[in-house]
Length: 327
Ligand code: ASP
Image 1 (cartoon, rainbow, N blue to C red):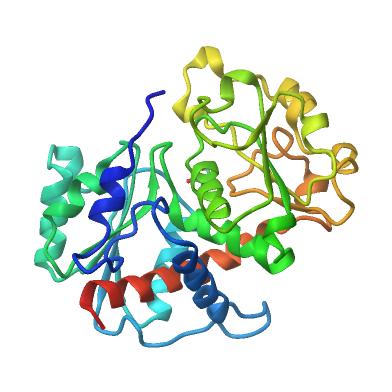
Image 2: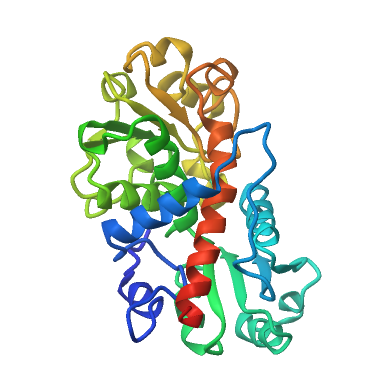
């Protein structure tokens, strides 16, 4: 898999005065910027029995969701986040959009901006697309990356960092294990970036050799191919889905063999710290990378990740609206 250079993404996502106008990558965001986003997201978090937070930060704005790859959580949470900030929201049905008739993505974006959409939330299987289109949209329009191929998924990285911070705020002394198909995971890349910028103590990565990322990525992380060693005494365990859609058939591990070697089982969880938390970005393949007992067990914070996803996307939308319009 080719290494993707994020220098362009970092450059194009800021205004001339350095404000965040688009969110394409977490690379280049400072510790203060990430902390400010997490603090604002935390402000929007509500307890399960309370009404969701809402304000009018995006009143009069229009947010368009363009998901050219499947999504449940990210798409719905961007929609709810935008609505709860007072925006109008449109969801394009990509099966029936004009891209299938050969329209370029840029023409689709021009069409939406001509209708006064000012935040375009994009997910696509093509690496680099958000950074390529961002320089061409009108100055009132922001592009938010909701999942770019295997490259990045910035809002997922933020919501993972927020979830960890809620349970284990002392980042310097934390040890996290990310296990599974890191090679194809945009989540792992963005979460690692966020945690690194926030000064996480130790990151371990584990998986079958051919699903670990190239050596120049995840700098400083400790690589393992034996999960039983990798999981010893960690504070956080994050399992990843096998991204079959990004693999050639020959590389897809068989489900039960994978679970035996790398799955999060109750027995394996005993090797982590007793108060370790379990995360998964979902969708989960139960019985493959995680068993039911662990996914639904006491240590699981997987549903909390989903709840935090809405709060994080509210924080990103509100921050971007300020950056784009200089408020
Ligand atoms: N939902 C996450 C993503 O879009 C994780 C996954 O699909 O496995 O990358």
